[in-house]
Image (cartoon, rainbow, N blue to C red; front, side, top):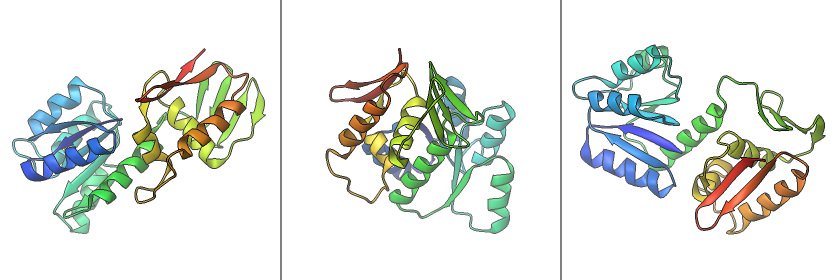
Length: 221
């Protein structure tokens, strides 16, 4: 997953960048609003983290420009402002979440993962990959019209991979999406879950490829 962090405090910005990279995210760091807009125009991101009080162009103005261009990327506003009216203003401009300083890294990571999960196939009611169909509103999965019985964890893993079909998903990112930030899943828990899901997907026009030492890719056959 790829995130743009816009933060003018060098110490905090570097700390956020390092912490997210340790969680498997790809991070671009902008030091002011003008640079943030440049990054947002030049690349696609899964989530934006915008500090409210950025130099040159405020984070709130950056948000307005991004939304004005029809970009519905999930956005977390980060600020020292604590007044309700300020939070409402950010949400009214199109922010998806709001985080007040100071905050713990665990909270930011948890909120980013939650936003990313909600944003998969944003605006779509279903994902169709060959004969595999995933109804995101009803959580129903079928292969060629035949219902597929999945556990909650199997469904979450399938959607995480299908939402980024043909793209590499690192094990670290997948574990972050599937398990709470402060949990410690068994070292082979993802492999056990993956093996069960692969068996159930027999007959589907997709395959989950393991890229040794890197992660997983769901490919359409």
